[in-house]
Length: 91
Image (cartoon, rainbow, N blue to C red; front, side, top):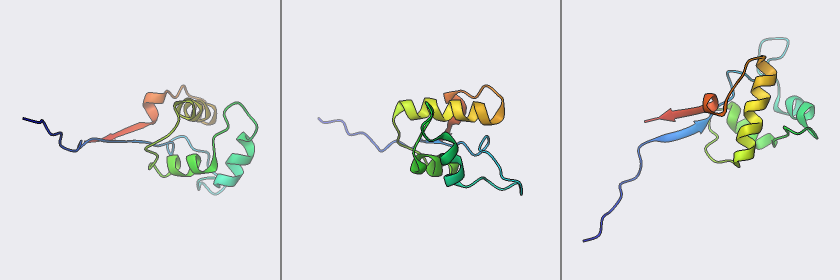
């Protein structure tokens, strides 16, 4: 007898919207403007990573980018944002 696994019902995503910088109108700052500020820094992540994490759709990434996103969110908010704070779990 072979055991079969059912597809997992849990989904996990990374979201940074809570801490993402806003512009002078209270809207999310553009991806390009944020990327320009973090480019060539130790916490640089790609534009695609920023966009999908801002949209709360980031479901695959390198673990070092997860740490970098947490550090960026901490910098933007002035709070201690952990990796666990960024993860959204949908059951």
